Image (tube, rainbow, N blue to C red; front, side, top):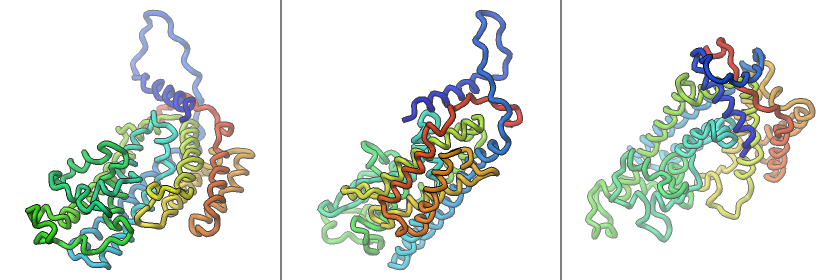
Length: 386
């Protein structure tokens, strides 16, 4: 998407990775002189750009906590299905989903620089894959025997679900928040508690199939809901563990860049988020299947959560990170466009969808390539490496 930026970043990391610490051989043809170092990084910039990555740990911790509450509510609901329990699980789903989207400013690195952070897209697909084909999971109108719920040839195990997720198409969604969304709300947004009552005997239309108790649709639906929720907890825990692991590629890649390179990386990610991903999420779509929160409603909440994340990110450090992301006239433009967007995150009636999209485009423009310096080589001092 941004070939020059990608190439510069990849070159930077290759230059760092090739430095094994061993003395170079003096035999053979002389090598080209090394690129001039950037010099001592500005301490404030080094601190704020590292704080940006560490902020991801806090966001992940909050999301994991809210999603654990969701899982607890699901367990309580399944133990004694009633409308109050279902409503509580639905409310916790929104809390979990909104907290996850606070991480969007950092997950956008997968969009702006897949060469370095493409693995984050796989995390996003496991946790928040959408849109989905509901008939891949469960029965839908006109197809009462569709989906994994009704396919008794598929054992409901963690391995089976991971294998089925995205099996033939990205809309083959089995894992994550939106699979849970469909199971909790149903196709029309009003799933009945009866769909989750434990079955001991087949219904009249199921008698001929000679199903065992474990194969009855309600019981498989109950197990599927519980298992998807547990796998979501596992994926969030793994992601949080990897986020700050010094031996892991994500953190090592980011940390080993010069602070000025981190700024350029963050700038590109935020520009993609503001100019592409978020406008597509809020634009009215004739295809309702593309709508975020298609079954659960509150369709603007993921965008509001992502923008709250942007606001937190740009104000990290002293001076704040935003001072390095946009400068001069670009900074003035940001300061003009940001307040109404920030207000929209708590009062969605403040701006129309069209006005919000225009404001997001203006914010993205302040992060345009003209405002950015080229990505420098990654040259770290020994103190930074430690």
